[in-house]
Image 1 (cartoon, rainbow, N blue to C red):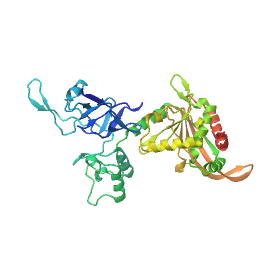
Image 2: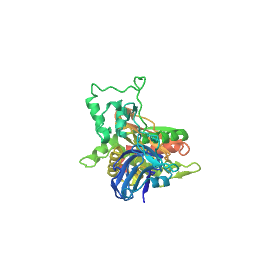
Image 3: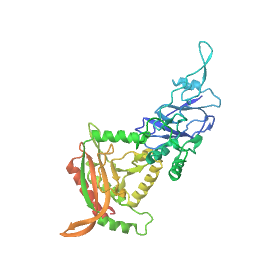
Image 4: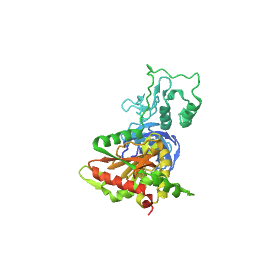
Length: 418
């Protein structure tokens, strides 16, 4: 019997998924465990796995956005009539047919065959601009993001992927070599200098929604403290001397925050509307910048791990985050978050709280500057951190005491090695 494949809910916040591309085509043999397609969710690009055996009889949506539980495909016996399965699911047999195709259906009353109307194209959040000459431009989400960042009109790029699809290497080649001299953008209306439009990715939509909810529902306040990292600089050199795994300052911040959360459980809490949950586990989210926005993999129980263990874990997470290969469970369960922009030369900034956390720590760069000690001016390595707090959960004095503990640990890193 034919099985209808629907869009699964691949994350707790997912409302729709975007079909990036099919790895199987109609008529292909399918085994359980085979990857049917790549689906972009609000957090990552994931693989759609088949749990059925048979042949791929029908593809509902070739590319574009599909709501959760929307029909994606039909798998069944070879040459089986899949239309009955679609109709049993309340979907027309022509569901998802490519634009321009027609399907002959028998009229139940007259017995005559009439062409069904062409279906409306599925709205896709990753649709490229439409040109009069060729219709929708096919491009991967990564290629679209790269083109938007570089200000490139996709109509001027030749695709080398399947069926002329524009992929990453096409954008890279275009940036390196430039457009052919004869290639001109297609006219679509009055030109507006200095403007460009591009589709919003699922990840960016989710970032916008969740952080807007956080910013406008959680009363934020901010506490900034300057930390003398001079001893941390010296200790890190010794820790990394002849070591295969080289500890970073961010690893020290993660460990210091984890140990401080043990002493200040109110900061390790969540607002639940009618109650406050004090989390027993300490799981720290580490914000990682990726192509489409931001992912926050979670380091679990860092207070029980060594600095090298934390470093190995964070590096692995960051690499897989940029490749969109993180698993959902690796991005869930955070009780506190750290956002570090120090490596970009940012001295100080404020961050928006990452729900369900009550606090997030923004970490700036380490700057060598003159400071006064015992009446004498000396050079020191100083770092500013800013704690964003949800005032419904954390009061000013509570946040301040937490920062004092973090500062004490970072100014005397040997305490974190005990």
